[in-house]
Image 1 (cartoon, rainbow, N blue to C red):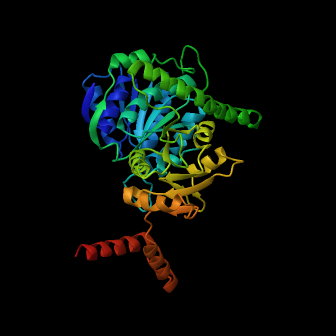
Image 2: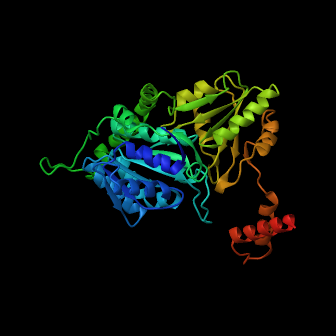
Image 3: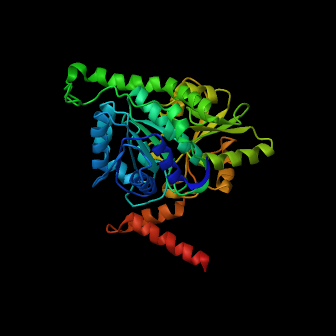
Length: 418
């Protein structure tokens, strides 16, 4: 059913159509509209046999999900940014216990300094937590990925994060095809858990595992992630057969077949990059976009095949590892180990900074000639950084760097406006 609807509310309707039995909720922007909409749906009786649990923190939200899933309930929650960090201990427990929880991460920057806008720092910080991570390029795919996520999670008995860009997607209003519940029921079978806490058949879940078996337990988690590389594309095909559209999978290729330069990315920036590629193609440039949907597991072989015929690739990253650089680019390099490809890292969009077509064109004008640094921060204001370093060199009590730089940036902006 086509609806003009906000991304968050569309996701809520998709989750509701999956008939979760427990929803554990704690609000934090920009995911709050998802759990608010689900609350209203449960109250109105639009989701059968569902318990909506209001909790006092994000840690409690994931803890409640762990208990519900261990008791055999289809379970869902949502979070973002510091909320994800607050629940980290429980996040690791959920994957370690092999519980098929589905969680929306409405991607948002992590402080300090506090920032409520979008980048991928939050979910990237949990890339080794044992959760699958799927990134939506638009709101239609965000809706579709949630439906697929329940099936993937429950088949593997592993938790899945569906990552959608905060505000850019969560708060955007557009036309979205909301799947009918009858079709969702056809696609998504009833939940049959692999492990259940049942008083009639007592077992232990979460018992201590010593050195004699811990490596094997961790290896099993690794193997299940690798198994997901086959399950994710299969579920994508099953989804297409039922709903009539291609969505999800491991990755999306756009005009890559003859590309000399390929831009690798995750999430909603895909749309801007496709526009840039179209414009550069009009000038005869052989360039394309590779959008990763699955970051965990990382589709090493699929990435290698997608990039094997280009001369260079640029990885646009909305997060990075302080002190070393790009995160996704290191994975791409590993996928192409033993080859002579040129790889350039472009750090962009941190803290919600606009990624404009003009800035991308200016960067690519040089990148296609390999005339860029290995790591570039798009639109970085070096003067702002240099001035702060000068303050620190001039006096010991130079003050808070974020506050100093924000004041200077604001002063410049006022002067420019005047």
